[in-house]
Figure 1 (cartoon, rainbow, N blue to C red):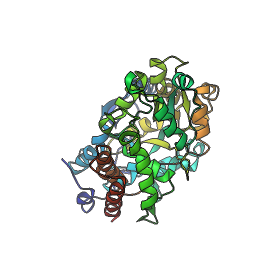
Figure 2 (cartoon, rainbow, N blue to C red; figure 1 turned 120 degrees about the vertical axis):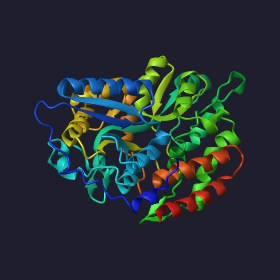
Figure 3 (cartoon, rainbow, N blue to C red; figure 1 turned 180 degrees about the horizontal axis):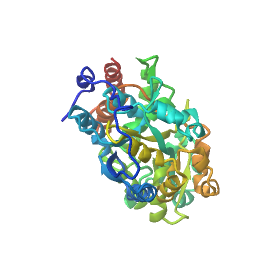
Length: 412
């Protein structure tokens, strides 16, 4: 079921959770559900450890985790709000925060968060991704730091140096490609989630998306960025032919299996890569710099409260992710950076050379773009238009035209 966000805004306001939910009495038992969109084995192992550790510290509260596939997350949440069947707690990404708040899916946690002893430990940037019109709706749970993996052995064979710019990246992708060996230079995510890199590249080529609430895409710069990216498949043949439908699992499996020489992802997949490959085979690098800007996202994932029931139990669960035991357990299983700067200073991070690229990225990394409508625009306009260009049904200029029209509609 496809539901227009505007169809529900007229009849729904923010959910007034504070003050509605009863306090959890001493010794009282409660169960709560938690909606998330984890996909990998390592993420599920990390979540299992966090849940188990939480159960030891809060034995009266049972967490029931529910996986909602990422492409379905917003439609499921929309349907849940309309049916008044919200989950108790949920994962929130910065690009979805505005839309979730607009549809009345999240609790305003500002007062609780600012009274929380750990509030001051986080930089302002950490709260920005879940702050809407001055109110805070979630607690940072962990951090996605964008970076890339590359095949050190392939680069050595070709006498190539690791790329630092997009131009060098393109050159390396072409030189690494050998279709006779079923080798391609790059794992392109053209399927679900692939809109992210299109947007990042447009900014790397110097075009903004939105300025003062209005569409501000520079068509010439955006077209150049889209052409650069689509050329990897349509002209250079430096990515697998399956790229238009490849999601995160496909691009990661292709890299691990030795089909591709580079892949863009984030720190959360490090444990998966370490388990599948030998240390001498791969390395990590900061994302290549574009001709105008160096774009890599420091994307905090948040946990928030969606249901007006069990407020104390829900708060106990979402705030537990800041506990050093929880953050360290999740790091050990997934490689995701802790959201707390105190925990992120752990020796296991700063002494691990593989994390050097992530540490470097923290010096220039940006938050993802956030504005009301970005989630729907990204997934229903940017992604399908990009896919059209990959399969030869559209040109980069036509892709950008459609993006501009769609963005203006999304902002109205």
